[in-house]
View 1: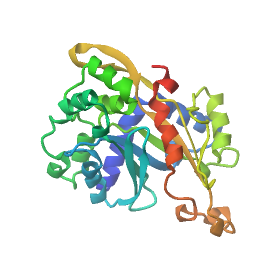
View 2: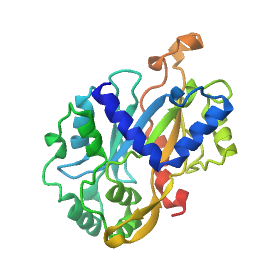
View 3: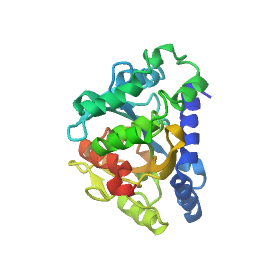
View 4: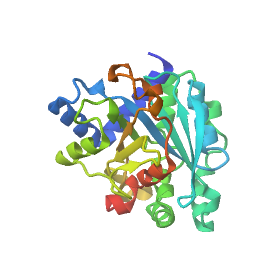
Length: 296
């Protein structure tokens, strides 16, 4: 097993424990005969959220996956949400793409900046620089350990009022935000986002309807949908407990590029389909953790 395998397996193992919708969807797909075994699902991409402060953020986080063979690709800007992002192409097609976003902390109010930096300033140096990037278990442990002290409920709620993204990260840190099922590789009848959404709602899965349940790129090549984030009981400083948004599941349909439309289905590979991401789609998918979707 490679270092990258250990990291991805560790991420997915903890994520499945925390997001019951994952097992619910997999079990239903098995029962329906959509997949023959649990690992019959292709993971299109995984996503992480970070804080844009000097010793953390994208510039720190990307060191881990670039060392493991990922290549940095296009940037994305989300002006209204005050976010920047990049996606990273995997070293081999069996691995998921990675999407990393970062909050532009300095664009927030003075009070929000003060709260965030009171936590992130506990991280004195870039933690990726002291991490053994050849040790999969060490990377896995790092991605699931607290980077700063447990926030107070008051700080969380103050941030929530200004930036729901900021509040999510201050509590969840580097926790895996979502993983994504590649819809186009499923059997006919389930291999479009539209068809799969019907199946998901039939089994009782609540979908993000920000903008629309199906988010489509202007070129029509990338269609996405997502569940509404699971609600989790979070324990804050001083033992205070509160229900907040956790993580969610996404679904992506990458259509065949025009120049490869002639290829038979059994010859289609990743490189024949629409690549990358779409800011307008992602902007609405971020809202899977927002109160407007979750109600918490």
